[in-house]
Image 1 (tube, rainbow, N blue to C red):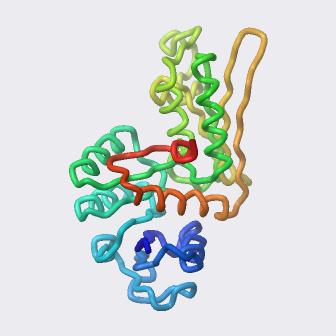
Image 2: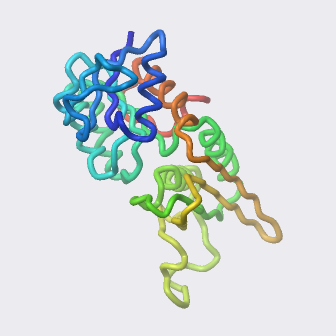
Length: 259
């Protein structure tokens, strides 16, 4: 059995994960983290202790799943790694530099981290398709749609996609940003030189679109999600099982676990 702690257990994805873990044959929900419910109990798992901090919840835990917030996920991850606990990161908002630091600490402690901007299977397939295209079309931009209440920009899905597109091939532009007339912010943010545009409006959950351009033609790959946590559960639990398979250091992207 793999012993699991879920941080963000009372959140949108956290509750769905709790139900799936309790129903599984090979996963054991050892503890949970939720500041608002600390010392209480979970309806889905009444015998599981809820802690206010990750540090207090890791005794006997093999894997920490983090679905909390962008301002605490890095600290949670580093605490777990220092204690020799593997981590699955479902929280967005970390930068490339953050992931570099996490990779170093994970390797130092001989444990693994799986991080994905999106643990949906179809989102992973969309990213894999974009990475197949990237070496052949060097001009692309990413559009990131989310709810008007989402705090971080761009989404973890869009940031991961932009960073990995840049790794797949050097981005090119016909006109440099320095040669832009008007407010340069209208061109979006450059993530590893890939332009990313974040739209925040009511009516969106998370949608990510990459547009590739060639003279006289375009190719668009887009993933849309409704307001349900269910698409993220299977991918997250796949990552839990894979990170226990001897991985050391950081693995980014659910697609890397599928192919």
